[in-house]
Structure formats: structure tokens, C-alpha cells
Image 1: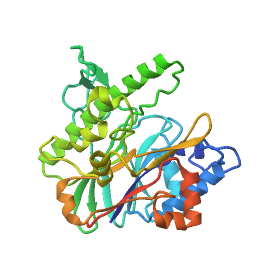
Image 2: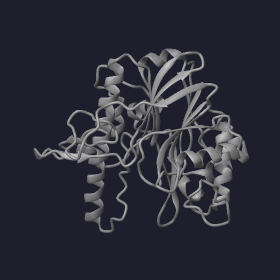
Image 3: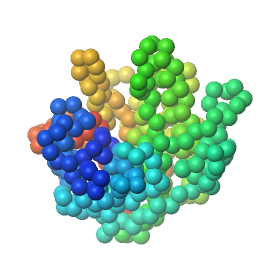
Image 4: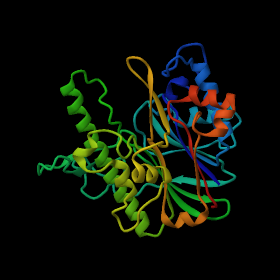
Length: 341
């Protein structure tokens, strides 16, 4: 079985309120790419992935007028994707949703959230992901109230072969200081965003521990907006959000080979799942932001990871059409896991 995670940047802007494609000559949110080019490129990539399940990060949003499920179903039909069934969890950011596209002949999936709902006062024990988590972020003795703009999607899955497992699709808070202008504002907002991102990772890790304690097979996948050694503010908090979610200090850790490579090496060539054009000159910054973490029991089922990077993956680089599509579809690249389930 092939399971993928793919952050399609500003996917929402490629659809109208009725879930119909806006594949025209207007500029997309990506640099020097039209909406038609991004739409076709995304379709090309999804087709080439041939995944049985794709955790779509930044899927089209759901509001009173718009529907994530309708937009993704139209997308799957347009490109004749085998993975055409859509699963959506708690609504989040009106322009970004986490959703699962999957092949119903290969997989049965349902939204199965854990934890208790909360009111505005929140809970100190990891609540349901649409709730409020009370945690003291700045160690001032006063609890901070943490929420998810994009609540993780919790999936109870069963393969056609009868193997039951759980998946959690994640899009953690961005640490980028959007809107900050002065150096003081950038520092303050960067630290604040990192605190919130780390709190979300603590919340997620508590949920992971509950699944592992129940001896459930678990896959955690998506965009954590973080990686070991990614920025200087990590030194203030001793560790990254990725390290918290992996839980190497816990009784049962999760595993992702790319995260392990970065944590063990720190220098030399590193894996990357995202490529951003940076102002003012447009030079590109590469980063490892996307992960597929598996529980220890799944390590015995011959897992194989692949980052579909247009330059670092030899097959992607040799295929000019795929390489171009990967660059035009998103500033993130897909990550797949092939595993016997």
C-alpha cells in the first residue's frame, strides 16, 4: 500500500464557491504560475503518485458556501484518480483544510477523533483536536489557551487485507513572522509562534502516546512546519517540535528516516520536502517540513519512504514533465510511504 502526504499550496484558490475549477490564465498564489498551470500540474502529480491514500494538506476549505469534499471530488474526477473518496474531519481555517483522498477499493476510512470536547476554559489533558489545550507556554505559572487553526484529521483505517491502523494528518502552526516589520516584531512574533507550534506538538504527542499505549498501529503524517536545527529560536526551547512528536525520550518513539538523518547528522546534504523563493532576490531556501512517522510495530512491515523532489530524486529529475509539474503545483513536494498492510 502507498500512503502519501502532500501540501498543495493555496489549493483553495483553484476552485470557486461551487467546487468548480478556476483553471484560467489568472495568476495563482505561487510565483509565475497561472491557476490553469497549477491545477494541471497538481493533477499530473496526483496521478503519478498512484497512492492508495493521500493526506492533502492545505486542501480547499469548508465554509457556509464552500465544500472541501465537493472541490476534491471534482478534482479527482477531472484527473480520473483512483483515490477519489474524500474524508474530512473538523472544519478549520476557511481557506485550508486537512483531508484524505483514498481508494475505497483498497482502504476503508472514517473520521474517528479521540479526546473529550472542551469549552473555552480548555483542558490540561490532551482534549479533542477541535478543543482548547491548557498549557503553560512561558513558565509564568499561568496556563495559555492553545487551539489548532487546522485541527488534525484522525482516521481509523482498515486495508482491503483486513489490517487495522490509525492515521493522524497534521498541519502545525507556521513559525514564520507574517506581517512583522521591525527586528523586534520579528523576534517577538517568531518566539510566540514557536511556543504555539511546540504546544501543538506536545498536544499531538500526548494523543500519540494514548494510541501506542493501546497497542494501535499508527501513522502520523503531514506538515509540522519544523525540523531539528531549522532556526535559531530552537535553542531557546532545547528541542524542535519534530523531536517532541517523535518522542525519542518516551517509552515508545515514532520513526521517520529523514528526521532521524537530520538529527543524527546536522551537517552535509540533508533531505528537503519544501523549496521557497526568498525575498528580495528570489533565491531558494530548502527545508524538511513534511514527515511520515510510523509506530514501531509498522517498522516490521517493510516500510520505504520517498520524497518526490524534482531535483534530489533521480527519477523525478529525469522525467521533465513530472519535474515541471512538481515545481508548478506547490512549494512543497509529496512524501510517500510504501508499506505492507
